[in-house]
Image (cartoon, rainbow, N blue to C red):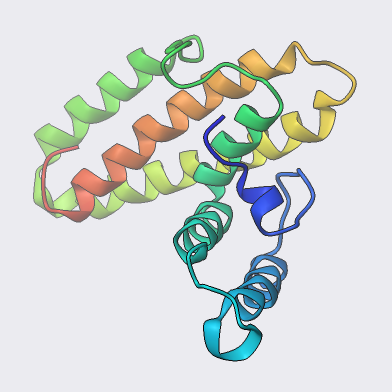
Length: 161
């Protein structure tokens, strides 16, 4: 593992982390590193900033937690939930046929899917302590989540879903 953002900020390894808790931990660590305030060198500020960015983004936080727990990485398991690709292909086809006037509808669909994946991943991480086999399922769900994130990015940039 390259870095553990949870350890960098002194936070527990869990998916449910309120933004205020991440911000508070970041500020405490940043103050300790600041050359003017604490005599630090400031050399670790990039790692601190990366850790904060990672933990404030629920998808990035989930990937970091999966890595910390020893689950499969993005390159190790590219599988998707059963039926996912068929569903997405149907949505993309419908969105392409509808054109720009319907992009809001498809964006709303994608945002709702993302919310569902976020809830599912949170529930799976809560149950992982009793079932390490869930880590593969977390990876599959995160792979689908990433796919949906790309779809939202495409819709936001005015491209076809």
